[in-house]
Image 1 (tube, rainbow over the protein chains, first blue to last red):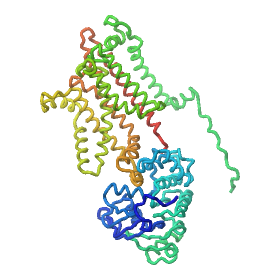
Image 2 (image 1 turned 180 degrees about the horizontal axis):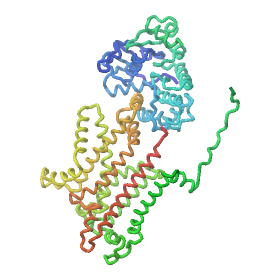
Image 3 (image 1 turned 90 degrees about the horizontal axis):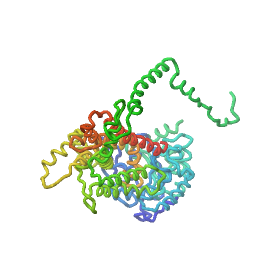
Image 4 (image 1 turned 120 degrees about the horizontal axis):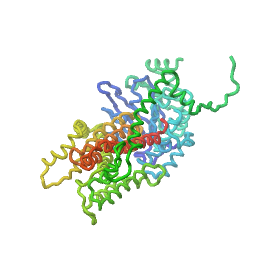
Length: 257
Length: 364
């Protein structure tokens, strides 16, 4: 799973994602407040925080599933605007994995992985299927390729969803609470795939409550509350010597039992 | 506290088959109340069905060609068989009826080809059915070109007219309805308002009014030199009327698809039309197959309303036969036959839609 992509719009030393003064409102509710963030290429970031803190909303802004009202987002050298073509250009470089998998239930696992290769990347079907099988192999689910999503377990569905995103050979992967809807027994199989992906050098932004995952793979942990970034630090510092009181309280609540 | 050391092997389920007597006992005669209810129902059914069967089948007259063949005890189907050609072709000239036969045969073959999953080349056959066939049917039925005698639409009638109106209505209203449903959910205010106005206008007027407007009022507004065929006007009216209903059925399906589906499609870089065409609509349409077929069936039956603007569809042509002085007094046979014809078509659509639903089920 290489993170390199020759179609990349900018040189490899520029940041993967740059966010400046990002503000977003839902109606009158100020959901993201003055967010500044730079994600380097190959960097693995875990975003955590209490529910409603805006962490999902933040990463959903990076592929324009959410629209922001103020500030600047640059993904892989492309500045986010309202322009549909530009948004689609950014989305081709950004893979996303959702809490509820969001596989297409009317398509087989293989077709789920092929559909965007065929219609967005305009690949011939045979080539798309080859790529799809490669990635399904990597997430160890190639034997289920001809089943429908409804016939798979949650963990298997989420692994297919990861393979589906990887088939587009994205520059960066966004994970929106990928294990929150899974039974405890299935969380590990998904995390294993994500750890392997991180080892291969993929740029990753991961909203999760899996602190074990954050400790093993993250380069940086970001803590958010009330729509703002409270603290960001490498995992050792973050977990052992958190600076802010709010972070300490949060950590004591999720690690305290 | 015992710990299980060996896992239990899976076993076959016990045999629950019971035979006819067992089935009767379990389903019709389980308990005194149900037994009485079953017996009463059977008696009532027999009281209704036996006279009907006696009238329609046993005492009926089947052979002959004139009124003299009717003995008067049961139904006289000679009334139908003597007028059968008119019921199928209306006033279509005898010499040109092979053209109707050809079109109807082609249509039956195309539908069968598309409906039977095993047959190959669905895409090409489908393309021909939607593009080639209407053109061929138009020139064959209307004539006037390629040395074919012209048959104006006022000579059309009977089953062929009913099928023409129903087919055009069905094939036209679904795509228009889908576009309207998408438009009604559009983020563009102008598109959305246009679709809402269109849907609410056509849904708010009775079909009879639409047909009257098409045949009586439209010619008042259009200059007399422009000849606008009455059947064509009715077809357009029917298509628009039902597309408004279809739009609401489809919109119901669109709303039932979780937003995550569109988000996932967006995240993969698919554009609006691909998201709709590949992800949302296939799921939404599958979900509302019962509603779509319901609308198709209503449309099919309501084609008989064209009789009020002077078109002789299947029902109207049978009614016209009732006033034939040689054949007075056979209204029951006529209406029963008309009902049977409509029922056959509608029931076929209903069964086929159930089959399609089962086939498209992917276990979610």
